[in-house]
Length: 262
Ligand SMILES: C[S@@+](CC[C@H](N)C(=O)[O-])C[C@H]1O[C@@H](n2cnc3c(N)ncnc32)[C@H](O)[C@@H]1O
Image (cartoon, rainbow, N blue to C red):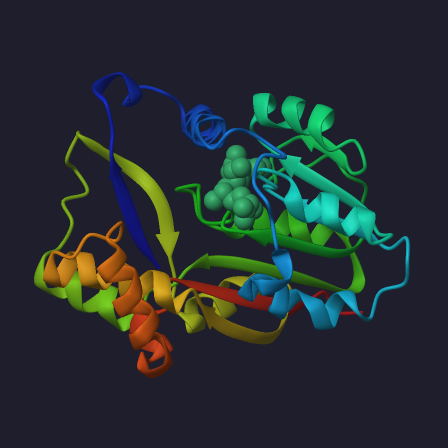
């Protein structure tokens, strides 16, 4: 597992990790206009394609948790589809806004490392881009997921993928972890590493999918060729290259599916 770091303002250096994560994401969601402002077509997302076969096996009213729900569009759409969907997020301001904007689903403030839900409670738990955010590693999130899932239920998570492109960059220019102008941002894992983490937490590994290849291409075009990801040209080029880009080289995220035995 590899660490990604981010540049920070000096006053952010002393903030605790949980407070930093909460403030960081609260600011991002506010800058995007808050819940309900973004038209979400979830069915086109690769995460939805990974999730769909597992949703299809569940009855109406099945209990589903979205851990680190952000703007809440997944929980809202699953609730509208007849599931008992809960969105949990560490950002108190975001959850307060979610409760007002999206009254159809249940939203709660909480930490996915200690949710407070009962044992064996959920029929499915998914979490996109959250398990990687704490420097102590993924195990506290995985252990808690194991506890609150029913035996036989599935966990689907996406985490940053340690692609061959990123490994190559690292081999040429190692990151200075002691640089005080940066702080830990997230873990980045290979397929073998995420499977190892899930197995260590008691899960059976079911499958994995490499996703967000175009995002990795856009980052690559910017990093290696200086082509800004904001330019229309870069976007067109990444679209053209997408069908021939090998996912192990360019994928930005990995979805891992695991099952609690029983
Ligand atoms: C990368 S965003 C992903 C949001 C959403 N899952 C999506 O795919 O759009 C991470 C989200 O997880 C939340 N988060 C981070 N750490 C958390 C934790 N330990 N417990 C609950 N939520 C957390 C953040 O507040 C933020 O909303």
